[in-house]
Length: 231
Ligand SMILES: [Mg+2]
Image 1 (cartoon, rainbow, N blue to C red):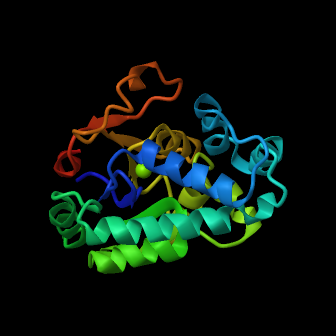
Image 2: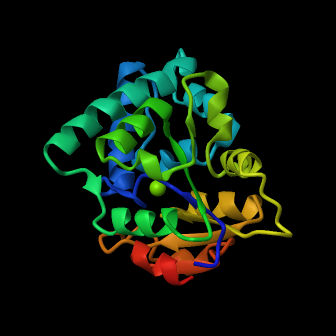
């Protein structure tokens, strides 16, 4: 446990949501439908939105969305409803190693600091943390807001990470910080913020099987959260 600051992604890292890409795509399709997109993207074009950072409004316009500013409001509403149903059906749940690891870190004698950095909307994040009774472990949370401009703060932007580190008064000369996430966007964001990046590859996750070909490489790769305690 050589780090002072542990920043966690939420979906796919702490929270099991099944196949996350399929989950997000389903919501995207429903959202575009609600927004009456004239030229909804084909399957292989949908990824553009997740990597567009602050260019997402242009992408939505390309797809014939008349009021792209409403996109995240609708997307989050659909996401929230789906999650509540999945939780009820026990199809969305915390991975079994999560509470154990958070407790170990939280009660560590060197007073480690823990945070969440997620691209999920703040009210959904808050709901999840409370629902599973883990909000007490996090000193800070960075999630996305309700307003237009917030999307540019989403990972792969390092903005969320830097905001948290600032609150922790992080000084790279004195302490070490690590972000643990299950996607390429997490790794890019962490490296842009000049901190350690840890990719978690959960057993059902086949998404990242080609991670060795990524331009930006994680510093660590783990398959379960417990391994984090030995880094
Ligand atoms: Mg994730």
